[in-house]
Length: 390
Ligand SMILES: Cc1cc2nc3c(=O)[nH]c(=O)nc-3n(C[C@H](O)[C@H](O)[C@H](O)COP(=O)(O)OP(=O)(O)OC[C@H]3O[C@@H](n4cnc5c(N)ncnc54)[C@H](O)[C@@H]3O)c2cc1C
Image: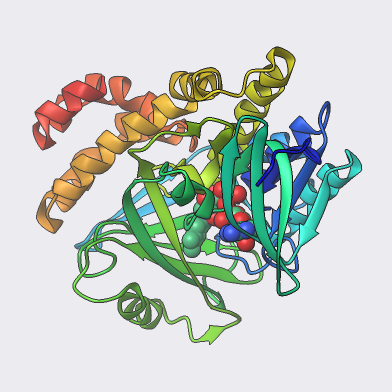
């Protein structure tokens, strides 16, 4: 293909929180085309919509289903560890409404959004990037200077440029159910154990008039859906309003940039390894990548070398927390059900509970040094990894 001048400065593949946060910021100065393969932003939902107050600040979303102030950890043996804080720890949002809100915000900055447009491939040349996508049954091309892969866990952009190498994929299934007993209240329940949700955990999140019940598994003896049926039975959640399933990509061993290309959000495995939350991290990555993209336009330099400033900035900030959380996840994966029970019983002391109740769901590992100093008994669970953590 002969190189022609770019039709858009930037093409973003994927209209989830990461792509929309990127597009909104980049469109302050640059022309942006966003390709979204679905015909509707925000649908289908593959998310529990539990977010920190930070996500509301970053997005400007002003409504939510419920406010969360407490969390109950349920150990494999069924022992409950309850943590309660005064301030809201999280909000249960309508995830679809968040994406629509972010899309409206981006549209107001003149981002062009093409729905039903599926990115299929791209080739970089000296003049920029030739992007291919399917639209109304035909293959189309668009020229751009910079391509952003925000196309989720199955990222075609990541695969096209050999960037995505996920460490783990957690399989999730979830429903909104009317339970009667659990719908109200402000406490999320998290269930652990190889019989409940091997390699991850199960959750019950009160949404006010429904409960969002789901689980993730990694390396179980049956598919996530098998554990899910058991969980629903155990919780007596008969009346289901919907059912969703999706992957959570945890960690990326690959790079985040190539010449003329950056990947963000789930496409880059930028998910919190302990909880699987990826809305805050995806939006944060989108903001950082957009800042570097705008500097690249100022400098006229779209080389991987220049764009890797995004990787460095990411690794210094939120990425550092994700690396530390990945260590905690490794400790967790090494624990048998018996060890997990012991672990929860060590945590069940008032001094530690006070520390944990004050934690930040986006930066949970910040508590590790204080927790270890208050409870030296924690060291025995994995001395080597814990040493790396502090
Ligand atoms: C069951 C479940 C529950 C979760 N619960 C939470 C939670 O409570 N809190 C939280 O913070 N996180 C949660 N997550 C994680 C969170 O949903 C993701 O981390 C987040 O959506 C990532 O945003 P993103 O923009 O990177 O990707 P996505 O939201 O996946 O958006 C990617 C977009 O790209 C589009 N796309 C894909 N391929 C193409 C293509 N080739 N061309 C064009 N468009 C394409 C997709 O249609 C999609 O719209 C959950 C995940 C699952 C599976």
